[in-house]
Figure 1 (cartoon, rainbow, N blue to C red):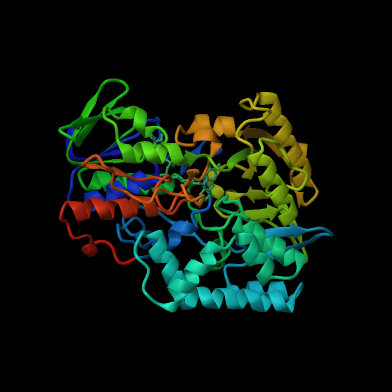
Figure 2: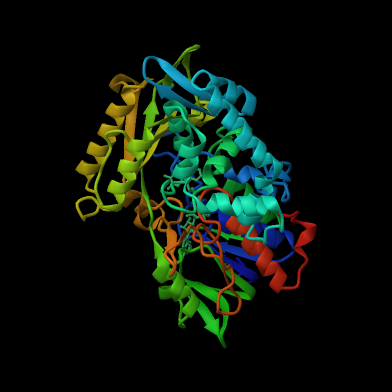
Length: 510
Ligand SMILES: Cc1cc2nc3c(=O)[nH]c(=O)nc-3n(C[C@H](O)[C@H](O)[C@H](O)COP(=O)(O)OP(=O)(O)OC[C@H]3O[C@@H](n4cnc5c(N)ncnc54)[C@H](O)[C@@H]3O)c2cc1C
């Protein structure tokens, strides 16, 4: 075990590992320290219900990361050399409608627009135009934004800024007319769990839908862990180490410079060039031996945002959707109307449960990747208040909420009868925050920062800190949560810049 390396990386979520892998690719010796006994953070697959049934404990869809050059250009060889394989699913998503009907989203703009025509010719055309504008210029502006780079000085960048400044709600309601289509677009636009009525979310509908229409419900073969496993294999292959069960309790700062870390079991790891931390912004000040105005400022401005609630099922057979073409399986399905979502979001911010018409994501990864279990692994994801009645969620409240979601979904899908469910494990915001200490408050997408001017950003904008040699990454860094790998890649680029290493040989722009 190296106790001295060029770089120490704290945490082995996919972002910290992404950062570590780029630094290792650049020839630096890297040691990654993960607090849990498994790597991956929220990209992890575990036996949550029955032996032999591998569930994605948190993320399932690796759609956002498909446009990161780490994957799209395979910059690190994760696909060619380290065994990472992705499936583009078709259908991308099925959205049940009452009366044995459903709207099917395909990984194809024209086929999806044709399905929209059944409800509204206007909305079918609006979808085509939205995607045409995305491909014509908004996509490049978005990629620069995600990469933390200055946008080009052109009309598409102006258009992108204008779009982003709006709310997702405003964009959807002014672009689409039909209630079924509005519901579909709203459901998809909420996939990154940002309040749809908040200004600053206006680019999400186009960005998220563009991903679904190109990559489907992108599923990593073998489970979400496939990504951190490939990244860890890359780091080790480049002379680095990835060490689990190593919770970093404090940072070493000598002469104003971060020189290493100490684990909570007393091990010291020293870094000669940099320490990059994927630990949570809120938790960082307590782990520092010196005051950092910048890190304290970030911690004070952070809040959990919307918390999530998941239910994991082991089922004998797949859940099916009633469609005009007959029963269909799908990696993903969605329920809930815009009004139901609005009530649910407002209630969650007031600390109340409101789930008469919830936004509900249903995931069956085994529909496309059957090797994960002897039957079907199925999951619900929705939002819920961080605390229930001002207290952590009790077991009884957790079961009650899960049962309510089950009763709701049973109206629309087949295969959720008691005799098809072998085991069920609900996870409240309380248990989600216990599962991964980075999910403070049960937030799943890294939470958010409330700035002085009242605006809210999902990720802290600076990867550098005011402590020399200490850098930030992870879902509390720009552009925030999701399996995007962006905070990891962006942070690595800034570390390399400060070390005088040319990153352009391994990173294409943006
Ligand atoms: C239920 C749920 C479902 C989700 N579904 C999706 C989805 O389908 N698609 C999608 O794109 N996103 C999804 N997300 C969000 C996404 O999974 C996360 O935003 C993303 O994985 C965060 O990655 P990360 O590497 O930044 O951090 P994390 O995955 O949170 O990893 C941080 C790691 O650092 C470790 N760590 C922290 N502090 C220390 C320390 N001091 N010492 C040592 N180790 C430390 C933690 O133990 C953890 O392993 C979901 C999240 C949840 C909770």
